[in-house]
Image 1 (cartoon, rainbow, N blue to C red):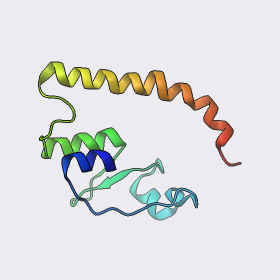
Image 2 (image 1 turned 90 degrees about the vertical axis):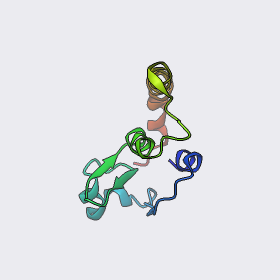
Image 3 (image 1 turned 180 degrees about the horizontal axis):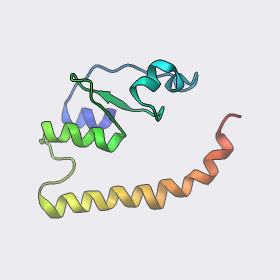
Image 4 (image 1 turned 45 degrees about the horizontal axis):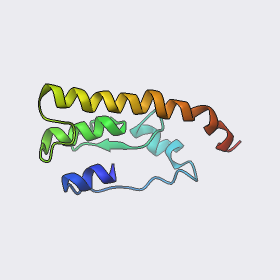
Length: 104
């Protein structure tokens, strides 16, 4: 999120959530995002947008330059293709090993 916002030259107020102390599982944060995951963007009207890509797409719609999700059908599709490949073929491969690093 920070890199995306910096590339767009967008500044938004942010509240740090302490993952080490499991702050994302607090009642206050659960009221914002019942899935207890970060990041979560709370809009002025109370709408909550969670998930990094969804939040980035929200900002892209309001600040289209520079275009970080491509311009036109082909560029947008290629960006989406590489995002999905990273998720499905890279990140999902790392998930089994991440259980070694979790606290019990």
